[in-house]
Amino acid sequence: MRLPPIPPMLLRALQTAALNTLIALTLTLSGLHGFLQNLIYSQCIGLSIWALIDFSRLWLIRNWRAQRRWLILIVPASVALGYALGTLVAAWLLGEDAIAFTFAAPRTVLSLLAMSLVAGTVLTYYFLSREQLNEARARAESLQRQAAESQLRLLQTQLEPHMLFNTLANLRVLIDTDAARATAMLDRLIAYLRATLQASRTPTHPLQAEFDRLQDYLALMAVRMGPRLAYTLDLPAELATLPVPTLLLQPLVENSIKHGLEPKIEGGRISVSARREQGALLLEVADTGVGLMGAPEDGQSFGLAQVRERLATAYGSQAAIDLIAEPAGGTRASIRFPLQP
Image (cartoon, rainbow, N blue to C red; front, top):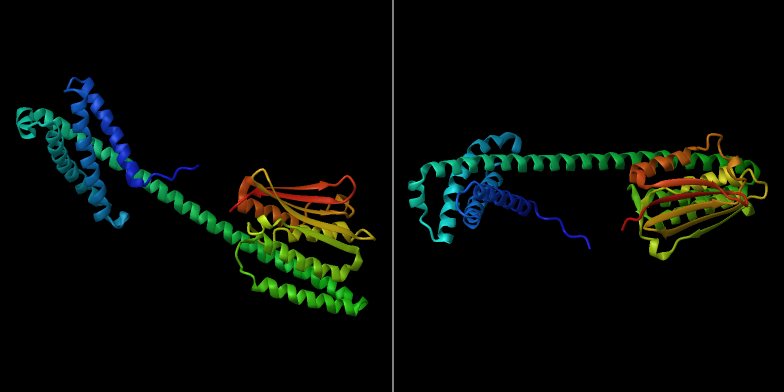
């Protein structure tokens, strides 16, 4: 089970306590009192200084760039006040007279105060540097997500016209050869476009929605190809709600029809499936067409290139796409990427 992250303020307190312990050990090795006494004084003084600096910074500095000069006053004042407060608390815990010790060994007190000032300054600089680094990293990740989402939307707008132009070209041929099938195809196209335009224009949607759009598209293509096109869609119910990039599988189905089934006189079958495999989602589009010899010479196509680019944008090196020639004929395209809840 994954443990929740430590709150930033508690983490700073623990780091301060660790430094206090190191200071106590150093004082003990130098021969100044015993370790327990040094540890109590070090923790009381160090935590008091940290608390005063941290809370004063959060209270007074609302705009870091405009008000960071406040630290020039906050750090020395917090060190002086924290040293005095911590000394009183530690003396009370140990039953000692802090005021008498101050007058009895003023040089020791000044040395410890100077050490506290140095430690407070170093810790403040360390904590602020870490905060600024985390904020910069968060801004960079946010910008990267926005850029990725913009790129996915751009690729989606490129894919949709590509599919539309292909369909209209096929429709133009049918108008001259088979008016009834052209009318049925036009009706399917209108229904498909209506469903597409009503869908949310987000970079991802449930896998069920992806399969629903494939069903609409294949039904549209079946009007044009008739008995030359058969298809099956296999989506287990437990995978239906998983988020996937929109229009991820349709370009592969288009490739199967254009480069696999259309060049084959008798046509063939397209099978689209999804399954869970070793913590990843595996999506496959297989056809019984002419195989890879019907694909472009460079092994690429508009749709396949777009799928590769979208996977790289959404999942980076965690995603993979493979195009495999089936031994019995046909082609199988496999997509694998990490499962997301």
